[in-house]
Amino acid sequence: MTKSTISPILEELESKARSLLSSSPISELRRLKIESSDGGLCLFGSLSTWHHKQLAQELVRRLSPAPIPIRNLTSVRSEYER
Image (cartoon, rainbow, N blue to C red; front, top):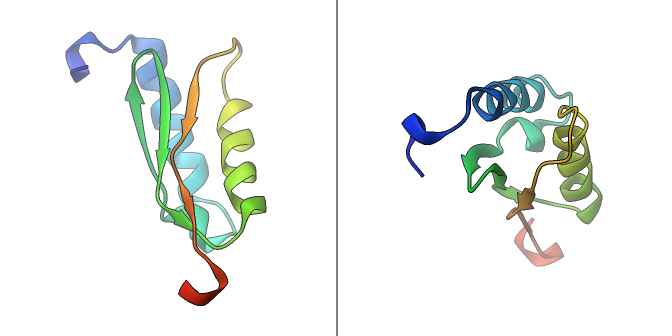
């Protein structure tokens, strides 16, 4: 999906989500990437805990007044990769 076909509402949500994550006190969340895709939002990046993965998803989900698809494609590093 190109930027020209993304709805203005979804574009605004993407911008708000990017701003929210970039101002997080959790440094890992600040490094996540977010993109509009297929009528929803996708999260990308690597995190050290499942808790942070879930937290990022829920923070983004709360921005939308209506349910939208959120694909959380973040990975959780194993203890040995940290």
